[in-house]
Every structure is written in structure tokens, then in C-alpha cells.
Image 1 (cartoon, rainbow, N blue to C red):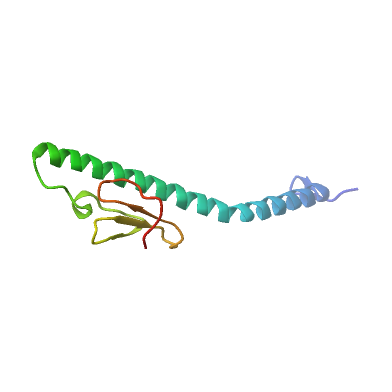
Image 2 (tube, one colour):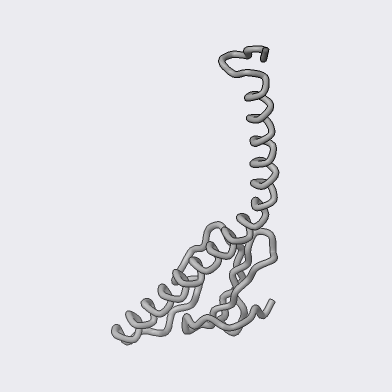
Length: 115
């Protein structure tokens, strides 16, 4: 009654292809969301690392009686563009330039970007 194809009937093959198409269409829809969530998570992680690193270096400098460190002395950032302003603020920028975050020279996260 049904033609046999490599262990599957024609009906099973059609059902498998239909489910695969639906799954692929759904995955493509969420791929953009996943990329955004991933970029946001990466930015938050880099914010925390930069902030904690600056605060740690400031504590060390204060304990040693040295001058407060600058961002250039404290960290090297990979995967995100960054800018250091004349006032000592560090701005992290995602690769697509849609997300950014600014951290002041004391390692405190500011509410908005000053790009």
C-alpha cells in the first residue's frame, strides 16, 4: 500500500520533512533573539569584569600609596570595542554597535552610554 523508502514509508517521510520544516522555521525566528540575548550577556559580563578589576586595582594602589590606575593600566578587552574618554570613563560597545555601557573611572556602572 505505501512505498517503502530506506526503512520509512512515504507517509513517515512526509511527516518527518514537515516536522523538520516547522522546527527550522521556528529556530530561525528565535535565532535573532538568541543573538541579542548573547550580546547582552557578553556586555554584562565584560561590565562586571571591568568594574571589579578597576576596583581591585584601586584598592591595591591605595594600599601601596600609589596613584590611582587608569583603564589602560588595568585591562585589555577582547571581543568588544571600547573607548576611554578624557574624563576616565570606559565605554564598552558591542560589535554591532547596538549595545553599549559606560563605566566611570572608579569602576561604577553608569546608567547610560555617553557615546
